[in-house]
Amino acid sequence: MRYRYLGKTGLRVSELCLGAMTFGREADETTSHALLDRFTEAGGTFVDTADIYSAGASEEILGRWLKRQRRDDVVIATKVRYGTGEGPNDRGLGRNHLIAGVESSLRRLGTDHIDLYQVHAWDPGTPLEETLATLDTLVTSGKVRYIGASNFSGWQLQKAIDLSRAGGWEPFTALQPLYNLLDRSAEWELLEVSRNEGLGVIPWSPLRGGWLSGAIRRGAERPPTGTRVETAEKLGWGESWSAYEGDERTWRVLDALHEIAGRTGLAVPVLALAWLLGRPGVTAPIVGARTLEQLETNLGAADLDLDPADAALLTAASDQVLPYPYSVIEMDPELR
Image (cartoon, rainbow, N blue to C red; front, side):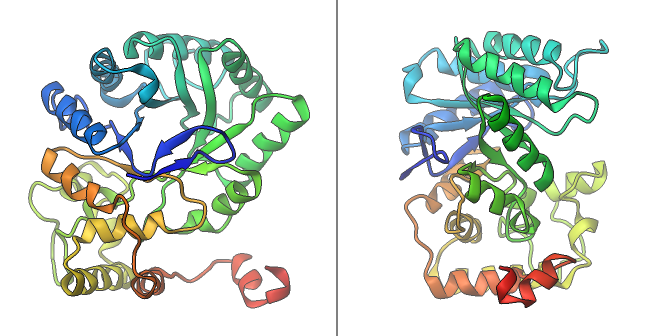
């Protein structure tokens, strides 16, 4: 396992981050702890969760495992924003919920600090200055070491960075966007902002909920039984079958992955993760797993440098038509 600095900070993290969204949902506590043990045995140091995952159970499961570890050996990231109760202030990025949220996460995790505290999404109901000033207070208090954002648009991210700079507040040091071979719109602005401002990038859903796991090939007429894609179709999640199966680009990407896998012997998810690890600005994709077998496969991407020709093949297969104004910028070298 290799290690990378999280953006322009002095914090080093493993090049793969273990996502804990499955803890308490698809993986019980025994399995979750086994996943954590195997991940750290392989050199992993970076674990991501959120206060809403399994209604807090994910943080609790992680916290009970953390008691058996040397705390400074593990970089813990969690998130705040969405509803954690029925009260009117049990959600959002206002000062009240941020302070209550960090105290609740610290209690569930059984630790005195959170390494990376991320706002889970934009909150249109709260002045951004209030959010940023409160996050700065959490850092100066020692309860939070670094802060980040997830699911922001380009202008929202840049505005937050500019306001932090103007106010002398702690800036975001990481971005957690949706980014994979099937979803590359983060490249249009979010990755540019992150590179320009020195943010680390930790993509979520790098295998798009199973689309890039190797279980789906061209010609399939329905999602494989028991897969997350099948569940997503039933529940209307973003990685649902209907969201991708009608796009020829999806099948081009899968064709390319299976062709390279057949030629190299590398597993499809390993190739998808390795492509992402090689993208400019990416720090550590967040890999989730329901079983040790899934995690073992994903760990195959650690220390792997994809052949440049294969990386170029995957990039070409996953290219998409750019919307305006990116199409104009792309056509004129002087604008790039």
